[in-house]
Image (tube, rainbow, N blue to C red; front, side, top):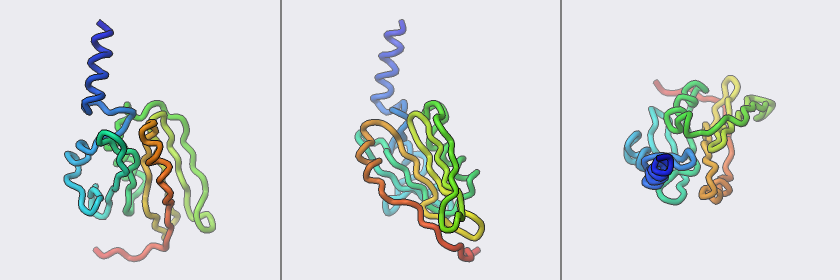
Length: 160
């Protein structure tokens, strides 16, 4: 009986019904956020996400841009990568960073995925807001190609 269950799980995983190594499929992203515009999905007003794709239509690196609170960012992370798909939490670390220590860079590391984001200090804006990186072997090249970091600038008034 267990052999049949394992076989069914392997089939569902390979068919894209179950996530492989916590990764998010392009199909899921299109169903949830619609067709990307200029290579980015619109997650909400003034918040977008671009993807670096790996094999079989699975995203390897998700780059979230826009002004978000930490609570909003964690909610987006929860929507994109279900708790069960992340694996065990390995580490959560905040490090003072930025010009003159103007914020905290956070790393939330799980077995199958990492969330890295910068929480800017008062009157500062950071872009991109976060990187979600999947750790499967098939995503190694996409992870290595991710050379961009966080850009911190003074906040300007937003139009209403």
